[in-house]
Length: 371
Image (tube, rainbow, N blue to C red; front, side, top):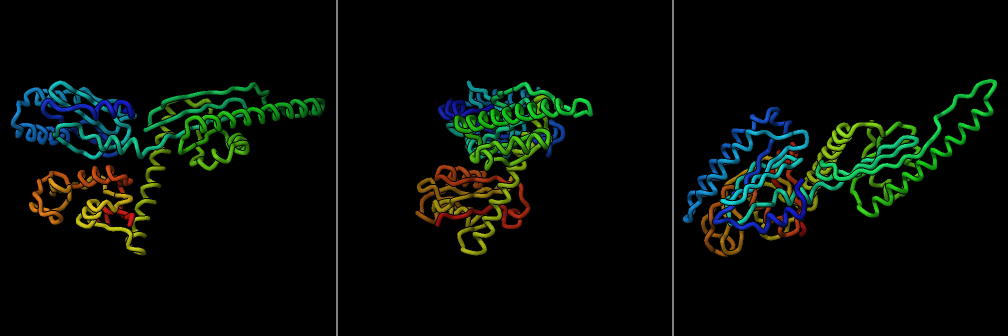
């Protein structure tokens, strides 16, 4: 999994003379077979070669390594937890990053890697803590970007429930009461463990799984700071294999993502319709991005558009070649949407890349404004 440390290392890479950055969506929901995404990769590689060959300095090493990208793709990837790929290539560097989230197909050839999509993933997807409980066992699993990073477990010996009988009902009742008390101690112990985990390494979201009765009793002992972060209760028991737990965690993260996207789009709709603190459509959104008024930028998943960027003031526009703001020279860019995303991140805005029909109706791009 990509980490903040590795991201910083990649950010320090400089081309010799160029770095090619390629992002490829291989999400199984859109591409049931990996080879279905191959034409998109071929198009990205073609564009990357063309841009590299325009450069004055020798780029033979870079071209050779771009050829290696196609060969590496044909070797295949485990898509059980990989839905996007990023390739960072120079004459010396050949880096493949497997991402557990879909990405927008993109190619950039510059002096340094184009890392905005990776940065966006790291900033958007918050850690998820999955807690599986029964009367004597509790297991904790920490997921980040869909990847299982850590696990822990607590087990308390609890006698199984006992059925009363006519000749031994009193003894059975005593044994049952003792077993229930030990189970309660286990739930308190487990709740303390979860609270400590949240204090040491807070997770934005918590999911709880296990038998309905055990989950209900366990939740009674949870600290309020933990309870308020519970987003799902799942039909996965404490004995479940890790593959099943991972699948459930991914489903939870995807639902959280859909819900948060829908909420962000709803905020945009309200901002546009009530207090005029929102804009939609590419032209108005680019203007707001340049003015650094964007609090939240929303972009439809596959939106791309050529445009222009001012070499003097970084103004973005759909038409050029004279800057409408400073009258400076503008340069053509293949995708002005990517430029808008980059500039928004730099200015501290939240960015959502969405698959949302309501956003599509509003022009496929928009922004909630700071002022």
